[in-house]
Image 1: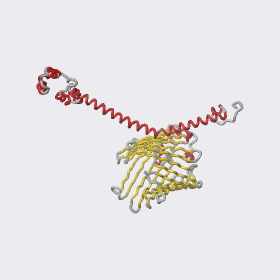
Image 2: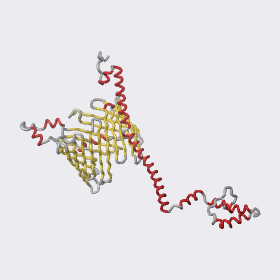
Image 3: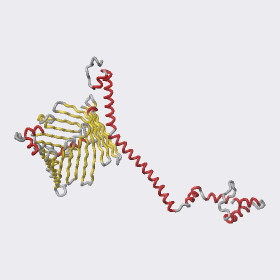
Image 4: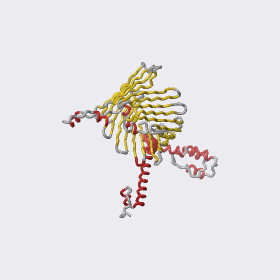
Length: 314
Length: 152
């Protein structure tokens, strides 16, 4: 994105280039609203329960399949088959489009994602979930990335027969090189909604400093604040506060991530204000392409412990 | 009470049957001059034994507390009960807080520390191997160097 920016700004007059820079700081694209809290959320572990064995096999540069065995007493055990197809349209060394992701289990429950970037600015995504031969959820979203802003429109669960659905619009604008402000409007209509339709507006902001990022979303539904800090190459911290006004509850959590490339280890841990402690350890077992994952979560008030272990082959 | 025993004993003519009859009659009269008389060990007088058995040890000890005034009694009772409850509560708190601390440390820190220690030990082991194989210079520099004539 940075390279694209440099090629698109017109060349400054040779007389006073530094003065121009001071007057008009170059604003970068702030990323989409979905990615607002991403850096902080990535620090927190994703706890799972039971044993999971996943075999990934790449059939070609573009196509990859995976077989997953889930054995657990909390979530139903089963086998899932997944496939990923990556297309030929390349926008950068790491991103190629279209991307088709699918996950299916023997009884026909399917999760499918299709992501395609039509041009430098426009990206579309379609997500569908089929369970028990019915469309449980479907969502279509389109992002437009401008030079210093991103806007997106998402339509979820649009049911033309029953006339229900959710439409969400996002807009995020870079105000200074470090600050981005935005808003989200969620609109839901349907027979079950009290009054036939409801709209909720929230504002979002992000402050990005070299070693830390503060982001927040405040709306009628509640507030969500995140703080992310990269203390060193090896350790990152994240701190999150979520409040839900409808349910009158708030949860604060602190998480950390330790990367030890020498030990082929990534360790994530979290402590909650609900007195819940969780951690996930991922270790690459060299020289074979195995990744071992171990997850533990202890809920002190309920005295509940969940242990999960997974092995990813390939 | 000892005098009462001696009086019937001193008059052997008095029938033993008269002694128990005389003893209860004489006891209230003799109680005034000798209020603190103690039963002689081995006394065979059943009436006297009855008086002793009526009061158990606990009752006598409880009776001793009557020498303290009521506020002192209630205050010390409350203090003792409070400290017993406090010790029990403190023990319970110590138990649950050490459980929370150690189990959370086992989940959050233990695997990380074990892995770091293991990596460090492997690193040291590799360095030692290199040192044995290639001489002390290789271990210090930490990289594979062609064996030098001076080092070898």
